[in-house]
Length: 201
Image (cartoon, rainbow, N blue to C red; front, side, top):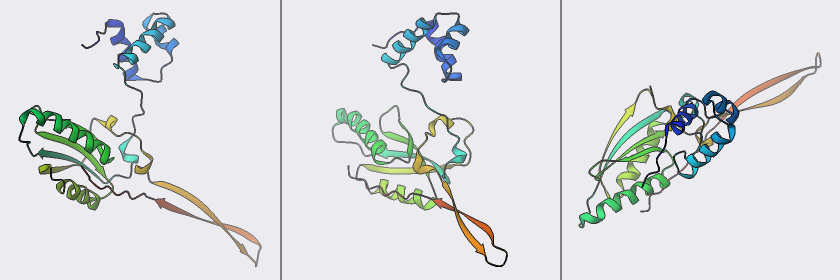
């Protein structure tokens, strides 16, 4: 049974949605409540799993991502329909753990299709991703579409260091013997991390 929330809980959630960094005192002042009341309500919302956590909304433009894709995966039905629902949920969890480039997973209402949103550094990475999916014997078919822009929904882009292009500045000092002047030559190095994923389900 789901836990019930009241008007105060809703007001707290609305304020946190706008700015989760807001201090308890400021939040209490704005809601005209005691700080202790807000604190206990927040603890209750967490313990009841209404609030699962807090995160940073990361701008996907700063990620080393060239391709964002949407996948529609049709899973092969089992011989026993009663097991299909359990299987597709387990298979969706497998995809979540096996492919860190997958940001979003959802199941269709009839429990036969899995929908994914995935990110890739280049088109070749996406092709490799699709090949590995198609190699899985439980997948019947896959359809893919690329997104050109994200207008709303940046929250799904969680921060992960391996998707960042790091720039490291290094200096070399060259001595000019004629006038004994030091010159710095700075070069920038781009670091990318290539991960390999192997499906075993």
